[in-house]
Image (cartoon, rainbow, N blue to C red; front, side):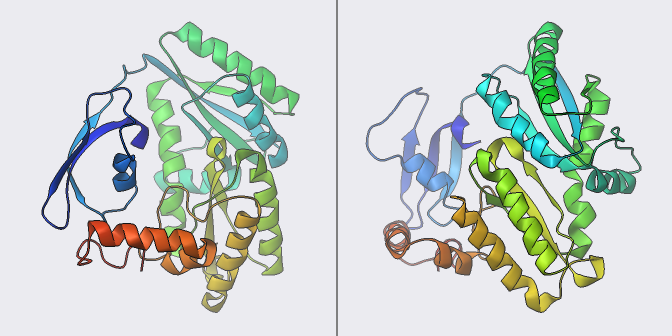
Length: 300
C-alpha cells in the first residue's frame, strides 16, 4: 500500500501540522519523511489526509491453483515465474490439509484433491486473452517442476470462495494459536526456512502449520497449544527464538508486514543492532518529545 501513497498531512504530537509530498510522480527533496511516518505504527504522528495514486481496475482476473506432491518443487517454481517477467497480483503457498480444514469451517470445499502443497496464483489483465497467455506460461513453468495439474478459475464467485478459504486459515487456527509469526527471508531462501522449521517442529514433537506469500518470501508459522498438537506454553518463547534465529541466519526479518507493535519489542532489541535502535529512539524523541503517541510501541 505504501507504494501508492504520494502525499500525507500529519499532525505531530506537538500540535504542528506537516504537509508532505503531493500529486507528484517524483520528489526527492530532502529526507523521505512520508515513508518514515507510514512505517511508524502511529508513534510519530497522526495522519489526517492521504493522497493516493490510483490505477485502472483490471477487467479480468483468474486464480490458478497448482498442486505439487513436493513443496520444494512448488517453491522452486516461484522464482522462475518472476524471472520470466510475469508479476502476478499474488503468489501464495498453501498446504492441502490446512485448506481443507479452513474450507470445512466455512461450509465450502477446497477444489484441489491432489498433492500436499499448492501455489495459489492470481493473474490479472485487460482481456481474457491476456489471462490465458499468462496462465499457459505459468502452467508450462510449473510442469517443469513436476506440478500435478493447473486449475484455472475464472468465475468471480468461485475465485472469491477460494480467497475466503485462504483468508480463513487464520480464524481456523486462532482458537489453538499461542502466537502467529510473520517472518520473511529472500524468496529464494523460503524453502530452506521451511526445512529448518520442520526440524524445529521435530525437535519439539509439534505440529507447526505454515502458509504465506511465496512471492515475497513471507511465511506465517502458527505456534499452537499442546492440546492442538503444539507445545506447552513454557516452550513458546524458546520455539520463537529458534525460529527467529534461523530466519535472521538466512538474511531475513522477524516481521515482514504485521509490525513490531508492543508485543515484539523485546524481540526487536534482540535482532537489531544497538546503533539502529539508538537512531530510532532519537527519531522518536524529535517527533514526540513527551512520548504521548502510542507509547511502548515499536521502540521502548
